[in-house]
Length: 128
Image (cartoon, rainbow, N blue to C red; front, side, top):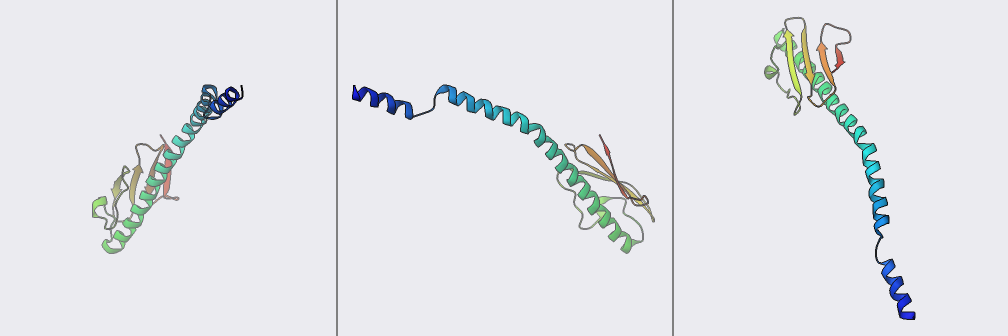
């Protein structure tokens, strides 16, 4: 009888029951379901931040170009030192001797950004 009791006890201590594993899986599923929407929001905000920063970098490069050329560049390729981040669409809509307008967005972001050098504030954004 002593052997039987010890065998039963050692068998029970070795692992988890199916019910315990199901409870853990259910709790993990609930936590993941609650976290995924927030994760998507954070990713979209990061893409928007990247677009906004690229537009600020383009504006700085435009100002540098303007000091040496007395006009704003109408093509981002002619701006030395400027490179858009991966996935960010940056475009110069118009440029002349006094002002320029540029836009930036990321396909996975939630906002479109616009830089108008004649406006105050120069940077604005719109939701998609």
